Length: 293
Image (cartoon, rainbow, N blue to C red; front, side, top):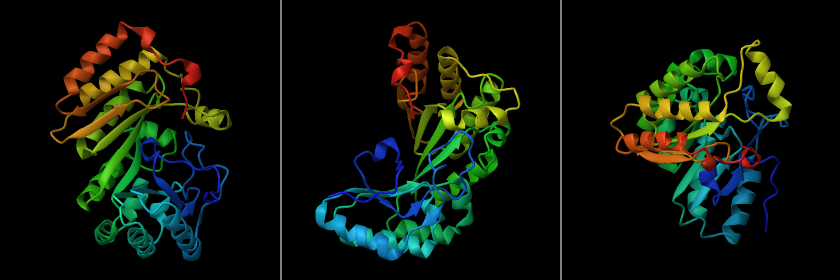
């Protein structure tokens, strides 16, 4: 039995085994120049009857479900009481649920009051996936992120204070060669300032449909970094992150040329040493044909 998903459907890699309910369709912002995930959709919110019907159906078919991901890209844009209603019902229908998660934009976290966030968390919404992308305000503006470093830090800390686990993504190469140094410096500063429980590093991969739009935003300044420069960005990012809190760091996404993983702060030097070793062993690189979002 399959749910009748409204394609395309996306979820984070760590939600590969999760049951997915589309509570919203598309993305209410949908202006990030590096992302074409929801360009083919107009944002809309699904009705309670539609959502309830799907939860009831899957509770009969997959009663032992442990993880649920709420799609599409903007579930947190829902009214807080409606989200609480959905989350509570999932918890009632699936007795073994361990985690309910969704994507979250900085602006959507900041629009919620601390009390709203806390109530949703207490109802059973556990985790947000948030795209930091970059900590450089210059780069964030050029890629039309709709947030600056200060608001990203504020949103992550606000969600953590309300009890959420935060899994944040950054994108290597997002500033190209021109803004590489600012991009990595700012990104390390943002991660250090909010210490998400999880950080994943992806590498910029532009689909043909948005490639020219993305490049045009840089007004002739965008030059794509190569694999050696990507590895340098990874090295410099890890070197500049300073935290006493545990951060599980992964750069093992399919878009990356190289794979690295570890936990801050204890594995920081080991990751740096491994990258130094990788520089001498280009044969371990992931072939271009096997990369992608």
